[in-house]
Image (cartoon, rainbow, N blue to C red; front, side, top):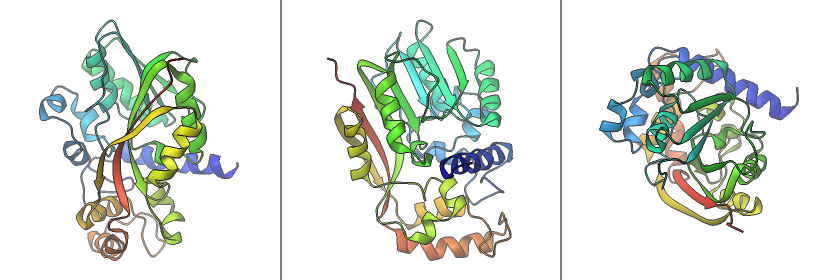
Length: 284
């Protein structure tokens, strides 16, 4: 297995454990229970209340990509890394019975959970497919909108993802994704497997992100929202996914998690941000 394949396998394993966890963290009960992030990421309480509880509690996103999306009835929406389905379900309600929503995820446990949540929501306009976001199981020029929630940073081949977004969008179609960007990450962070799965170690800079979309042929690129993480945000992000700093696998001792998060949060403050990025496929 090549390096890219290994990275994808590790992420899939970590998120399979995460969805099986009763409270939070990819390995154990971290300091931020699953579902809290969803409530802090721009989701209206009314929207969350209308969804199956399992979709909300298993949300691992960093923002609500549909908060500013001009999605309308009858559209076809594609969700990259659809997970347990929180954004998929919200999109399905926006496009209505004349529209369609496609979710793509590479993790069997997530796909199973998502399909359960779709069934519980009583929706018939959702299609969940297994695949990787670098090689989408979606036809050319077949979707009106691409959304994604804190997933592209997990890809070891981001230029391929950006090219796939451009390929599947119809002329005039747009993407609006929430993601993590980072400036000048230390090597210790980049090498850490579990910090990769926690949406930190694989993040690229905002400049690289925008240039990658431009190279893929997308236009009208803009960052519509940017939230720079402070120490408290960073402690939650780091602490929720860390392996044992002594090499013992998952660390469930709150003291150890807090100690490592305390070390890194001040050093990373101001370098990590959650962004909402818009881009469009040219109409001609």
